[in-house]
Length: 248
Image 1 (cartoon, helix red, strand yellow):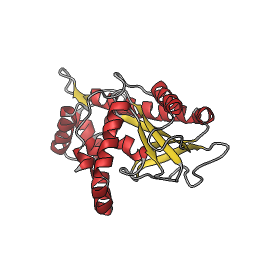
Image 2 (cartoon, one colour; image 1 turned 90 degrees about the horizontal axis):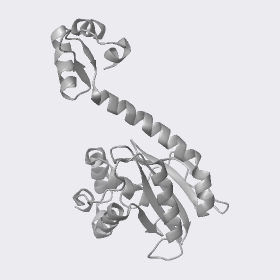
Image 3 (cartoon, helix red, strand yellow; image 1 turned 90 degrees about the vertical axis):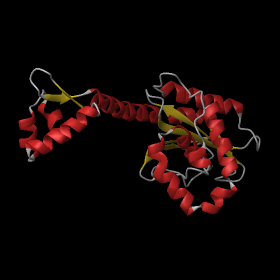
Image 4 (spheres, rainbow, N blue to C red; image 1 turned 120 degrees about the horizontal axis):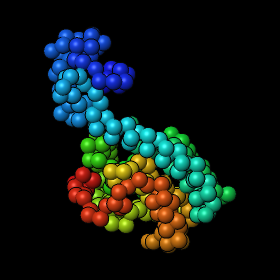
């Protein structure tokens, strides 16, 4: 892929093999596989290879994610002032949902939260919003690891997790109360990419107004903020997906 991209024009199989320092037969197997995945395409007349539509999708997704995360992060302080709450923006990393930007209110609730802090999938609003909207293949290892590490907790809270997951798919946000600190509510909502997958999550932490329900005005501000930075074609997913990955 890198050899084709650097060439800046269609390139022959012979040159690909030479620059990759592999036999032409081996290079052929690789490029044919990449063509099947649409990462490369082959010109019918010359037989040379060029980048395909799949490579374009990946490149655009990367650009969109970087741009959206930066733009949303730059506006976090304004959101925090409107909410009068701590707010933070998280993305998916090798550690799971991980904070990359954080803005604290005048009376901070969570001094321990900052860039680099990772959240569990099942017991945090941030984790559950990623669980609801991320690709299953992305979540698989993290889900299995968390179940193994906290099997008893997972069994006790399976129905609660399933309920919050369902709520996330229907309403577009997750609400938890007293999970991180007593008397504090956490609400997380997704920022979407063009394919309706989650790019990032924005979460606020504020004093509880009701143990069972979040502050409606705050939730609306959060959802409006996330929608304004989303690139989704159709908005929040209307049809709930199977909850088995986290409820089983």
